[in-house]
Length: 83
Image 1 (cartoon, one colour):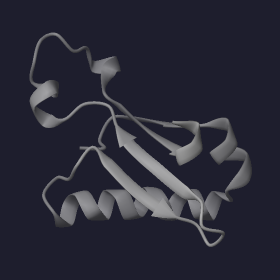
Image 2 (image 1 turned 180 degrees about the vertical axis):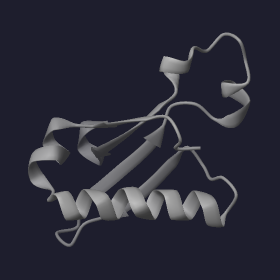
Image 3 (image 1 turned 90 degrees about the vertical axis):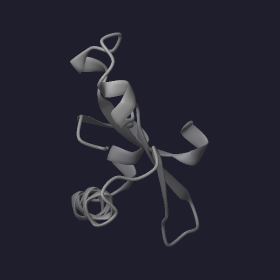
């Protein structure tokens, strides 16, 4: 999970600092490693109370199916209101 290409919405990219983005990415990867996988959705809340979604496009089962291409394997960081 969360091992494909990373996409970041324009709003997230312009509103969060590089440090904040790196913290989120690190937290996602640490969570996946500690739990030997995870759900497709992880939610963070910033200091002003806005929810930030990290959404993985494909789960492990989907990755093993021949109907999905390698370029389908991506995850996105976005504000909840962008979903």
